[in-house]
Length: 91
Image (cartoon, rainbow, N blue to C red; front, side):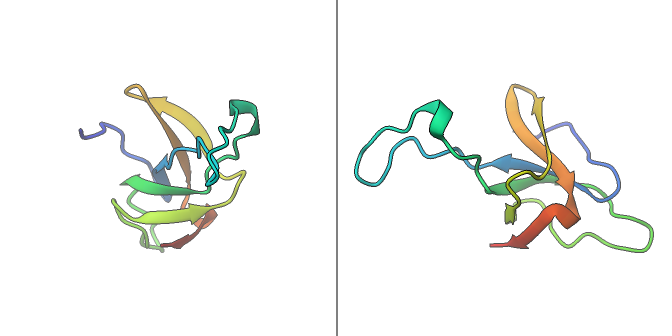
């Protein structure tokens, strides 16, 4: 399913990986104790700034900071939008 959203300038739209539901030993983690995911997949990339091209591309798995980006809901899905500089790296 293609998303009809195009980030502007140096912004990137990311689909966060789902938070862990259970520990490796099988203990169920309640919603209040789940950590915000720090990894996601790039869904859409802006064109970049005039003097800088974008490094990440659609489909890249990336790591980002715990408080990076803004949570948005698009077409019944939850996403993060952030500047490319908030991304730590591609994994």
